[in-house]
Image 1 (cartoon, helix red, strand yellow):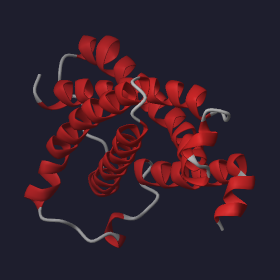
Image 2 (cartoon, helix red, strand yellow):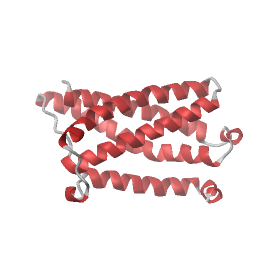
Image 3 (tube, rainbow, N blue to C red):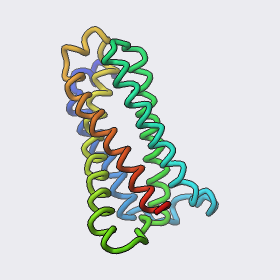
Length: 185
């Protein structure tokens, strides 16, 4: 299986990206009937945005640390950090999609001028970057798991990884700002 994936990283990336984005859009557009999913108690559902904000903040630190590690040549620390970043991203996404599938998106309750000129642009950029990150992350992750470390520098992993990490950091950071606008301000 690994050999097959190694030979077809772009195709596997595309397939995983399409499936992942279909799941995201199905949850956000509420294609999945809420009655199909088991419903957590209301306090658990209410805690998800706060947990996700913490997960996002931790992810920013972890990804930035992993990026710094590779710039210093510490491949093992970079690998562990990026794997942790992917786990944090998956955790965030599962919790977010579960809540949205059950309750729908959280409406912005602040002033309309802030909603129009601050909240929606920030949310739009956050969502767009998150969508763009999915195939980039799959691509660099698949390259990393199907090749020895000594071969990675000869692949697109370093180049695409820099772009993916940058966009990922911005998306997670904007997610925290969106959370602050929705729940604290």
